[in-house]
Image 1 (tube, rainbow, N blue to C red):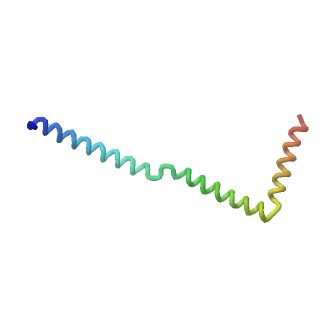
Image 2: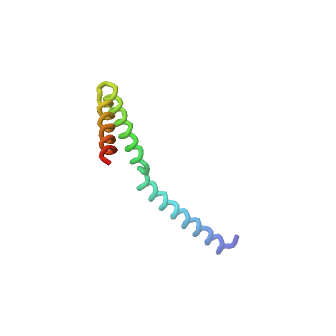
Image 3: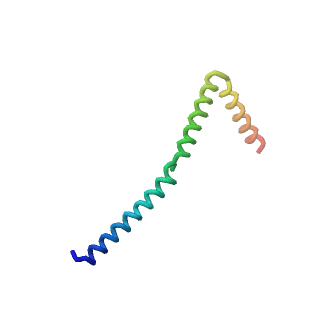
Length: 80
């Protein structure tokens, strides 16, 4: 390999390594928490479902909610 080609190869390799380092730094600095919000929402939904399940099992809130929804739907249907 002649000197000119070796220098071009070396410069290209250094440029590519620099680009790779910059991209890696950018992705790791801002993308570490990517998708975290989805898991937080899922956790909140699970906690709410457990609370509703406990309340429905220990109190009469499930039947009360069902009667209220049914009454409201009947009022809407009968009003029309």
